[in-house]
Image (tube, rainbow, N blue to C red):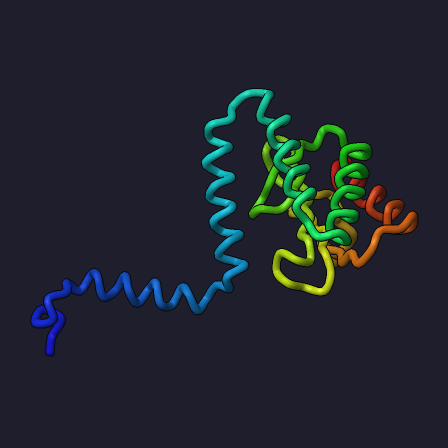
Length: 163
């Protein structure tokens, strides 16, 4: 039997195949993150003023408040350290997680453990961060709990990233 005799145009069959393949490529958590990113981009297009920074900060704080206790504690402390060490970074959501940008470009981001059901939260840095050290350096750090030592390390990393 051909596609014509089934009454479906070839284009529809291809779309169904792509949809089926996509569902196997991305996990449910990844699909949610992608949808959140699309929503964030739409919201950014509607915010073009200085008030957008305040809205971004409110969105980040609301997202942190939704997190489970350990992630929330880390997220709150991380937010405080980043804002103190790099006040020129603006807070915004990025794939549904807190992120901090300079001139609209993400410098660093926080991914809580519960988001992708991992055993630790992550503080990551983009290529905009100035952490270069020779020909090989870390761009993401696992965070299992917050301490004075972690705070000192994160503070130094953020200051270097924006220097």
